Every structure is written in C-alpha cells, then in structure tokens.
Image (tube, rainbow, N blue to C red; front, side, top):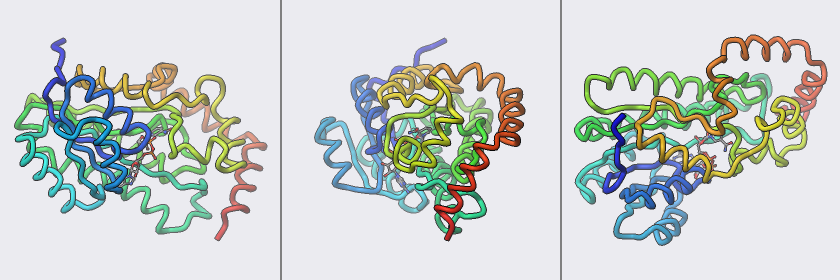
Amino acid sequence: MNRYSLRGKVVLITGATGGIGAACARRLRGRGARLVLVDLNQSALDALTVDLGTDTVLAVAADVTSLEQMRSVALQAVHRFGRIDVVFANAGIAADPPVTVATADVSTYEKVLEVNLLGVWRTVKACLDEVIRNQGYILVTASTYAFVNGVVNSAYATSKAAVEMFGRSLRAELAHTGARAGVLYPGWVATPIAHAAYGGNRTATTMAKRAFKGPLGKPIEPDRIARAVTAGMERRGARIVEPRVWVPISLMRGVFATATDAWLDRDTTFAALTRRLEAETRR
Ligand SMILES: NC(=O)c1ccc[n+]([C@@H]2O[C@H](COP(=O)([O-])OP(=O)(O)OC[C@H]3O[C@@H](n4cnc5c(N)ncnc54)[C@H](O)[C@@H]3O)[C@@H](O)[C@H]2O)c1
C-alpha cells in the first residue's frame, strides 16, 4: 500500500485544543504537516499555536455546528496555505452528568447530536471539494460507543453510531475520486470528555467500572490515539481503533451486542444504578 506522506500537507482539525485534538496536532506537526486548528476558544487556540510554531499553523475560533463559520474557516485555510488535504472532524461533547432518555433535558440532549453528528457533517461539507481536489483524506471521530450499548449516554452513542455510518458511506462515495475517508474509534481516553465516568460523577463512575472491565475500562493517554491517528492518516485507513483491545470486539460486534444487551436486561445492580442516576439527575 502506498504511504500517504503528511509532510507539507494541510490538515484541518476540529476540537483542536481538546485532549485528542491537541495531541494529534503535536504528532502531525512532528510529521511536517501544516495545520488549521479549529475550536471554540481563540485564546486556547493561540496558546497551542505558540507551542506548535505560528508560521505553519492557522488557528481559527469557530463552532462546528455553523456551516457558515466552517465555510469561512475553509476559505481562510485556502487563502493562507493554498489548499486543504486532510480533515479531521473530531470536535465532540457528551452530557455531563450522564442522563437517561427519561431524565434528559431536551436542549442538552439535542446539542450532543447537533455537535457530534451535524458538526461533523458541516465540517466535512465545508471542506470536501478541497479534499477531493487534492485526493486527500477525511477522518471522522466516532467512538467504541458506535457499537457499545449507550445506556445513560444515548445521545452520545447515537451520534457516534451515526458518525460511523457517515464515515463509511463517505469512504464508499469517494472511492472513484482518489480521496479517502475513515473512521476513528477511540476507547476510553483520559480527557475532559471522560470526566463523568472517571470520578466526576460517583454513580456514573460505578456504572462505568461495572460495564467496562480490565483493559476496556482503563483510559489511555491521548498521545496513544495521536500515534494511531498519524499512522492511520499515513495509510488513509478505513478504520482506526485504539486501544487495539477493542479490535476483536469491533469485528465480533453482532455477538458482543447481543450478549451485552442481554446482560443489561438481567443485571439488577446496573438497573439499580440507573434508577439512582435518574433520581440524581431528574429535572
Ligand atoms: N475521551 C474519550 O474517552 C473519547 C472516547 C471516544 C471518542 N472520543 C471523541 O474524541 C473527540 C475528541 O474528544 P476529547 O477526548 O479530546 O475531548 P475534549 O473534551 O478534550 O475535546 C473536545 C473538544 O471539542 C471542542 N468542541 C466542543 N464543541 C465544539 C463546537 N461546537 N465547535 C468546535 N469545537 C467544539 C471542545 O472545545 C474541546 O476542545 C470527541 O469527538 C469525542 O467524542 C473521546
């Protein structure tokens, strides 16, 4: 397989100042890529840019849910660097504290879908012509939640299952263009988005410990994702799964889903924890 060199390529990253985004930005700079960093807060972007080198980095505050803002980012990137080769649609949020469908506040629930799914679609839509023109690569951040039951995290898991299908469909649609698309599936990663399940909320933390055993429940450092992402971009891969312990589960997802859904049907401790979380979060 031909290696897709990242040297000199223009890579646009959303959620760039978050744990995974910033770690990837550092690794990609190390590979010689020029970067377009997108996140909500300009001063956080500026701090990261100073770290990475201002002459090869463009940092633009924008909200991925705004197609207009993402089109403006794409224009600014082309104006500055002449092209966009790779788009890493990575910005995401989760409900914190976690909630059930019954107790969720409508606007918070829909905001998760808006950012995680429509934000990815709008980021890609704004940049796709450039990526096709340059026969580049689009990477969308899903999650192992694309195939793990989304109990007490359903807006998030629903968005990630949808993002996975978006990325797979896009890859097939790009096959005739020379450009490629792929899906990133991180397991648990030690970043702010995982806060509730790792100490931020006592009930959610107990639930996560019960549901994710051994290495499946051990958060990895963002730099491990960044290494996998860099290597995945260099092969313009269809799937990037990290940590690799999730690979067999991803491959056997039908059996895994049937078994875990049945376990959730029966597990009275988990049901009691769900009831407790509902009591804590009911509005
Ligand atoms: N950390 C994990 O355990 C984990 C696991 C699987 C998938 N993911 C996914 O990885 C991606 C990156 O998450 P992370 O772990 O780095 O979390 P993070 O919270 O550190 O970073 C998320 C970043 O997205 C930005 N963002 C949020 N809404 C935005 C918007 N509307 N427009 C632009 N930027 C916005 C935030 O400001 C933040 O910098 C997310 O899509 C997340 O769902 C994370």
